[in-house]
Every structure is written in structure tokens, then in C-alpha cells.
Image (cartoon, rainbow, N blue to C red; front, side):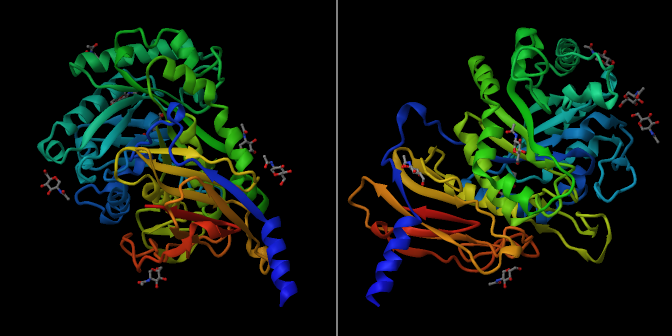
Length: 517
Ligand SMILES: *[C@@H]1O[C@H](CO)[C@@H](O)[C@H](O)[C@H]1NC(C)=O
Ligand SMILES: *[C@@H]1O[C@H](CO)[C@@H](O)[C@H](O)[C@H]1NC(C)=O
Ligand SMILES: *[C@@H]1O[C@H](CO)[C@@H](O)[C@H](O)[C@H]1NC(C)=O
Ligand SMILES: *[C@@H]1O[C@H](CO)[C@@H](O)[C@H](O)[C@H]1NC(C)=O
Ligand SMILES: *[C@@H]1O[C@H](CO)[C@@H](O)[C@H](O)[C@H]1NC(C)=O
Ligand SMILES: *[C@@H]1O[C@H](CO)[C@@H](O)[C@H](O)[C@H]1NC(C)=O
Ligand SMILES: *[C@@H]1O[C@H](CO)[C@@H](O)[C@H](O)[C@H]1NC(C)=O
């Protein structure tokens, strides 16, 4: 008995981590985090499947309203991406006209290559939650100014409609072209295409759109797939250097957006999943954007990751669609907030593997394109829990500051959330992948909080419970599930109440949120 107590004590010491939490945020470096920090980018070919064409897709709206219930504002929605550069406008198109390539094993739900839309396509934004902010893309890829001009006119017309205006749904900006840095590879421009040519084209398209819609919309600039992180090649720095911001329409650029995927990988396994989740990878992937963020902020502009997710190929099967990816998502988005990213838009398309939300019934497997034995109704995927946890941690006060905690461990990361100057919550992520092949031996780490406030004796704790990192469903957040037929939360909240002085355990592949107030 005596020995085993000693042994436990010893174990606790060896697997223990002391984490110090400042009682107030360090003032100079802590920016406020937006309540809509977690937002969505939607592949526009099937936009009306997401939101509804003639009536609201209530499942999708419920998943947005869950987040709004926690933060007080709905997520922002960027509509565009790859299919933005394949869209034409025809005023007589009552429904979107789509031509799809054949599905394949690696891309079971390809984007449409030809998309023709009419006014009803843009008017469907009326089905979004009240007060949603929207960013919409127009076609630059096909170098057809008529397409961009007609699309922009239709977008602006849609947002002037009484149904949209009275609901407080607003167009924040128009994006002209998606990932122009890839045009030289995808045939949209010659191999010799440069950022200087992009700037010239952008100015002429934007000048046309602004003149036709005086006083003109605001714009998102860049939206590049990659970055040279320097003034040569494609990057925010390069286009600033080439005069985009000092052009007349460039003065209406309200945001610089860049895209990021952790890599391209079309087949997954446990090793790839652990890589994705790894703290060091997340940090090195994101800090590579620091020069771009600094250059943008030096121009007085905010910076967003306007399209991001785990891996291109619409995600890696067995990786992007799993519970482990939820832990990646949470650490990735919170770490991005530390670098001066103002908002992060997780990219989603119907049937994509890396979706947080699958808003319509699917008949083909998202993993290999095979016909499903029975249709799969709308559902959320594991990553959705990361959005919920972030929303809950950010809260609805509108004055939350988040700082990363110094956790001396390659697998555990931690963040503290302050409402103004009051410590409100902390989130810890143990990103050691506990896979189905690891059954049996699931280790925990003990965390002791070194916290200066003597007044606080207890803390409340919620856990994201995950069976295995490679599970694709069956998660629960504080005892509740979002994997419900209508996307609303079920069950009752389960909270552990612990002494602050006793610390807590966090097992492999788990998230813990602590509430202090
Ligand atoms: C240019 O765009 C317009 C409007 O979207 C479309 O009708 C026309 O076919 C396009 N032209 C070409 C050459 O693609
Ligand atoms: C689809 O668009 C391409 C241009 O991107 C055009 O060459 C092709 O003819 C279009 N196909 C159809 C069936 O309209
Ligand atoms: C913008 O482009 C459209 C389509 O080519 C053209 O009809 C219109 O006159 C242009 N507007 C301006 C102000 O250049
Ligand atoms: C959304 O806005 C409309 C128009 O102002 C209003 O009628 C409706 O009640 C609002 N809905 C909610 C859920 O607040
Ligand atoms: C990003 O992370 C992936 C692993 O998920 C890694 O293979 C890749 O090298 C990283 N990229 C950078 C720029 O650090
Ligand atoms: C961090 O942990 C390592 C290994 O566990 C240890 O050697 C090192 O002293 C720790 N550093 C600090 C600052 O606590
Ligand atoms: C909540 O939904 C999950 C997943 O569908 C289900 O397993 C669970 O039984 C439900 N719980 C309640 C209380 O309805």
C-alpha cells in the first residue's frame, strides 16, 4: 500500500508538467481575438447546396448558429475558391448550371469545371444567419472582364435586396480571382506570368467593378495559394512593392488573404496523422507566414488565412476526416491567432474529406468514391468540435485576449483566454495520436497550474472525449454531441470540478478546457 502510493507519486512527478498562467495578459503583445475568428470558406460551385436555393438548408444554418450561440456572432463566409475562376454569369440561369468531371478514387467529389449562375445564386445569401458577413469571389482566371463585371454587379445587387439588408447580412468584400500564383501552372496564363502582371490585371478588373458600382465595394487582395515570403515571386510583399495599394481601386483593399494547406497527400496513414497533429509542424508551417503578416500590418491592413485546411486533394483519407484532425484544427487556429492572423477560414466543399460540416446527403464515399451501402445524411465531422471549443473559449464578451502558454512538452500545447484582463479559461491539447492500433496503453500527462491568484480554489473542466485519433465519429465535448440529425447539440453538459492545487490529467488525443470564472 505504502509502496504503491510512493510509486504513484513518483509517476506523477515524472509525467508531470508545471504550467504557469499569467493572472493578466501581457499587455503589449496580446491582441483581441475576433468572436468570428473561426470562419468558413465555401467552394462556390455547390454554394446553393450549402445554404439552399429556394429554401434554407436548416442543417447548415444550425451548425453556424451553434457557433453564434457561443460567440454572439455568426462565422464569416467566404464563397469562391477554385470554382470562382470557372464561373460565368447568365441572367437567365434560374438554377446554377454545373458541369462536373468524372469522380475518381482520390477526388470523389470534384469541383465543377463550368459553372453558370444567375441572380438567384447570389440572392441565396438571404438564408444565412442574420448579421453574417460575406466575402464573394469573382472570376479573374478566365481573363474575361465581362464575367467579373456581371458577377460583381449581381453580388452587389443581391446585398441591396431588402431581405438581406433587413437581416443585417452584409457584403464585406469582393475577391478578384483565386490563387493567381497558380495560373501559370493550371493553364489560365502563360508560364511566364508574374505578380506584376497580376497587379496590372487586378487593377483593371477592380477599376471596372468600382466604376460600375460607385462608390464601389471593398476588396480582399492576394488570395494566393503559396508565398515566396519576399518581394520576388507571388506574395503580399511583392504586390505591395508593385503598387497595388497605391492604385485607385487598391485603396479599397480592406484585407490581405492567403491560403495554406499543410501539404498535398492523397493517401493517409497513422504516421501522416501524427505529423499533421505535431506541435512543431503546426508552428513551423504557420510561422513561415510571419514576414507576410508583418508586411501586411505595416500597411495598416489586417491579414486573414482566407482558405485553409489540412491537406490538398480535398483532404487525406484516414487523416483529414478523423478526430486527430480536430486536434490539429484547434492547435492550428489558436496558434495562428498568436501570429497576427485576424481570422481563419476553413475551406469546405460538398463531400470534401476535410470538411467540418457535410450539409447534404452523400451517396458516394468521401474517402474513395465508392457507392455507399446507404445514403449518409447531413452530419458534422470531427473537426467541427474544434470550432465549437474555440468558440466557447473565445466566448461572447467581444473583448477576449488569447495567449499561448509556455508548455515544455513536444505534444501538449496550452492557451489562456482573458476577458479583458480577467483570466477566464484555458485550453490544453494533447496531440499524441492514440490510434486504433495502439489499443491498451493510453498514457496521460499530469498538469499542475502555477497560477498567481490565491483567491481561486476550484476550477471547472470539460473534456473532448475521443476514442482514437483515427476515429471518424463518436466524439463528445463535455458530455455533449453535435453528431445529431439536425446538427444541434444534444445531451447535458458534464463538468468536473477540481481543486486548482491538484492539477489535472490529460490523456493522449484529448482536449481539456478549464473555466476559472
Ligand atoms: C465571358 O463571360 C460572359 C459572362 O459570364 C460569358 O457569357 C462569355 O461566354 C464569356 N466569354 C468567354 C470567351 O468565355
Ligand atoms: C467549359 O469551359 C471551358 C473554358 O473554361 C470551355 O472551353 C468549354 O467549352 C466549356 N464546356 C462546356 C460544355 O460548356
Ligand atoms: C466594365 O466592363 C464591362 C464588360 O466588358 C463593360 O461593359 C463596361 O463598360 C466596363 N465599365 C467600365 C466603367 O469600364
Ligand atoms: C432576422 O432578421 C429578420 C429581419 O430583420 C427578422 O425578421 C428576424 O426575426 C431575425 N431573425 C432572428 C433569428 O433574429
Ligand atoms: C507542414 O507540416 C507538414 C506535416 O503536417 C510537413 O510535412 C511540412 O514540411 C510542413 N511545412 C512547413 C513549411 O513547415
Ligand atoms: C523542459 O523539459 C526537458 C525534458 O523534459 C528538461 O530537460 C528541461 O529542463 C525542461 N526545461 C524547462 C525550462 O523546464
Ligand atoms: C446524442 O447523439 C449521439 C450521437 O448521435 C448519441 O450517441 C447519443 O445517444 C445522443 N444523446 C442524447 C442524450 O440524445
